Image (cartoon, rainbow, N blue to C red; front, side, top):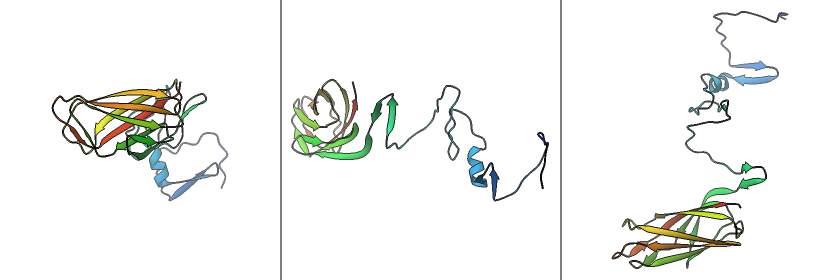
Amino acid sequence: MAINSKTIDFSGLDVKCDSMTLGGNAMSGTEFGFLDGVTAGTATASKALVVDANKDISTIRNATVTSLVLAAGGSIDSDSGTATATAGAATLSKMAGVITTEALTTAAAAAYTLTLTNTTIAAADLVFASVANGTNSAGIPLVGRITPGAGSCTIMVNNQHAADALNGTLKISFLVIKA
C-alpha cells in the first residue's frame, strides 16, 4: 500500500509494534522509549542525551571517558587506575590519576616527599593534587606543595599537626593541565 500525500492526520492513533523502520533505520519500542520525554540540556536516567541551545547538558553524575578533546589540539588521557608509591616515588603516564602512598609514618610537623615521574608533564605545565587520608583516619591536617619539572613533579605533603604523627597511607589525586 502506498500513501501519496504530504500531510496525513492520524489523530489519536496508537501504533503497537515490536519495531519500526523509518528511512531504513529500524528502532525497537525500547529505543523509542529512550527518546520519549527527553528534555534538551538535562540528563535523565534511561533517556537519550540531547544538548540544549547552548550545547550544554546538566545533571550528569559520572562519565567514563577514554579520550576527551578539551580544545583544538588539546586532549586529556586519564583513567581510574591507581599507582602505588613506594619509597616516595610513583611512575604514571596519564594526565590524571590516583596514587596511594606506601604505609608511612610521618612525625608531627614533618613532611613526606613524593616524586611522580610522568612523561606527560612539561616544565611549564600546571599540576594540581589533592591529598586525602587513605588508611590514616586520624584526620590530621595536611598541606601539599607541588613543584613540576620536565617529565616529573615533586609533591610534598606536610603534616600540620603539632603533636600527632601521620600513620598509614595517603591517596593523592593529580591532574596535569598542559601549558
